Length: 345
Image 1 (cartoon, rainbow, N blue to C red):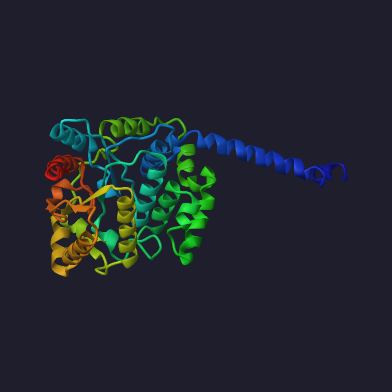
Image 2 (cartoon, rainbow, N blue to C red):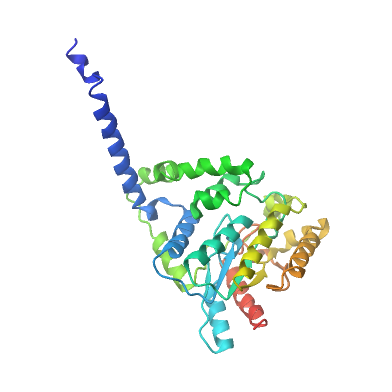
């Protein structure tokens, strides 16, 4: 009996423990080397764009676009070509918009970009109106908070994040940041899906590389589905709080100050809203409150230009959901935006 139990001898336990650690480390290493098969669409966009920022090549773009998911579909190649033609020289604009961004994201992104690359002459920033209101702040109660915090942690290191969040929010940042040290933890759901169908083909990442290159960072969603008025009225965007978030205003002004410090001009714009949502916000006063906030920011910053109209609407047929243009809508808006930008040059 004693011989049979010798496997549990305490002297042998450390070897088993270290063997488990080794197997875990090997699995973690393997998973980290196949991000194209694990990361979801939003995470893959962040992964690809962060790789460009953190790469060895020093970037020398004339201008960059920063924004959230509403700006992802903007084809910066169209804007680059239009400006190049207007100015009789090559002007390269790249769309660095990332999904799930809040006001702190733009400040830290520009700060890190300037530490590593040649400063752009212009920064175009597209912030959805909700970003300046209560309910869209990673340090407050908000819809989809976990996803926003998770993507925030993907983009920046802990020291950077701690520099822009209040002490009461630090715990909510530290926990997912610790998780992020392990792909096995962070992407456990995606890994489970992969294990259920390990032989499936993944053409998405390769297509994403091609699209990012052809559109200078812009994304083709591959969705031309049309949202309905009822869908919009049921969405979280139709229930937006009409209260200005002064923390968001603070970080937006910090972003503009950072650009001013480096003698960079900032051009602010917004992608359109669906007609149903636009009309509702006309009625509840949200559009006017937003316009006044933008006007106040404009009046106190001489390096800021606002591409007007800062708010406008498109018909629902150009939207794939209550807050995002579909591919047809993005193509029209990219062409329109390039013509509006030219007016300032």
